[in-house]
Length: 286
Image (cartoon, rainbow, N blue to C red; front, side):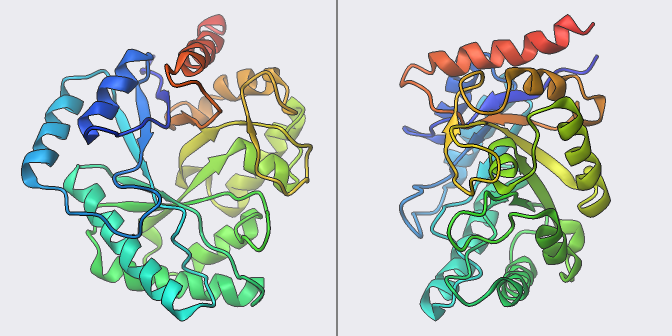
């Protein structure tokens, strides 16, 4: 059996290599990080020495996969020209930072239309994605994340996400990140095993299961179709714990990194517990 790819979003405070150390300390085999402050558009460049330190720490660790999440400031669908321009530049920079660190996946919230309408926003996002991918490092894939539908966010249906990829001239460089909380809040009822299986079938039909490169494993504080993005710990939200066990036993998803973004404490004790729990689900199935 191949090693499970399970972990959480880890702080990079003190240097990117610190995220590797922190992830290792909680039993992670996959982690997600920010390569820069999430509260700023831009940050100083990663030096070759910093990148080398990170890559050496990663190679010597049990971490098999590292995924980056792009800054939430980025909105490729913004109707504000200044925000749109900054978003294009910032996303290009984020992709290049990933390439420096030998990280192949960058998770991105597609964008928000801010009142301009969903269809035109999807077209704008795709157009701007193509602009970015023309000039950014070619070895990094952008993973469009499934959204909850909060506010004017787009990407809360699989069809919307599929349209973004279908309209792009760089399809091979665009994949997807499935967020369990987001799809539930968007209206995909995964509160039963049948509901989960139906959702996975629909993903395969619209996005292509082979294009799902990461999964955010989150419970939800709010009910199905609430359109509210509120993460909850496993076993404490509206999605039954049995669904996460069912997810872990789905062989079609076995090779996909599963990243916790559940609320945790500074010592990451909850993540340590949740990672062990997710691993135990598969052990029980052996």
